Amino acid sequence: MKSIVKDGVLYFEFSDEFDNMQIYQIKPLVVQLIEKNHCPIVKFDFKEVTFIDSTGIGFVLARYNQIQAYGGELILKNVNSMVRKVFALSGIFSIIKVENRERKGVH
Amino acid sequence: MNSMSIEFQAEMFNEAFVRTAGIAFLMPYHPTVDEVMEIKTILAEAVVNSIIHGYPDQPEGRIVLRMEVSDEKVVTIIVEDQGKGIEDIDLARQPMYTTRRDLERSGMGMTIMETFSDDFTIESTLHQGTRVTCIKKLGNHE
Image (cartoon, rainbow over all chains, first blue to last red; front, side):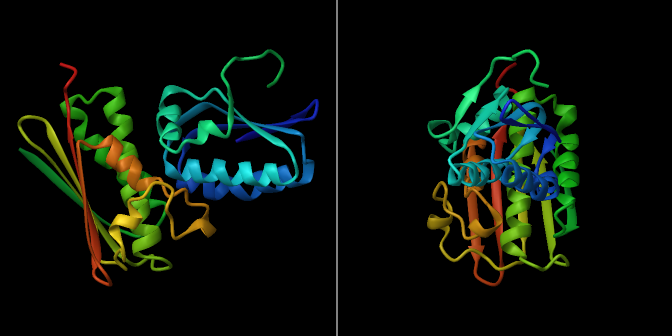
């Protein structure tokens, strides 16, 4: 996982198998970085993610609540067809914004 | 007909191993990219459920994955534990229902297994265990 703060946006880039084990390992740091920065916008980038399951849905929903609590906004990026298929079942897209365009200079 | 089984401990890091082994078993049957993704997800959901709900704080618990492929390329996936069992299966199957919100579980595991399978059944007895059976037909693309 990579993270960077730029122009008031906190970016996270997730990679590989975004499964129960990986989420267990990265969660404390993600929670802490969101809390420390309180950025108005937090973006989760799934470009390099090769696997996801319901653990990922739970993680995204919990971070959405965490970010909402201080008035911030969570945006999902590069949601590929596999991630979309799993997320779509949960109705996550009705509450969380998705941005699929690659923009220069964000990495 | 071909079949295999793996028995493993209810340790969270075994989930990736079992998911990978299960899909490796099916490789000779040339599943599509979508079928691979769906079956991996089914395996992950079933195994994580057994670990988290069947054996909470009981990493010594045993879980068995059995897989069968028929000559018609119909895959049967069975994940079985001798854990806590499910009190109310109908409730557990409701989308977004979870008993472990504290672990940030989404409650979507069973919905995902059901959606990605052609047939999905759960049998469970309190304090005796749970068996999940998913059936998936391969090769509708050929």
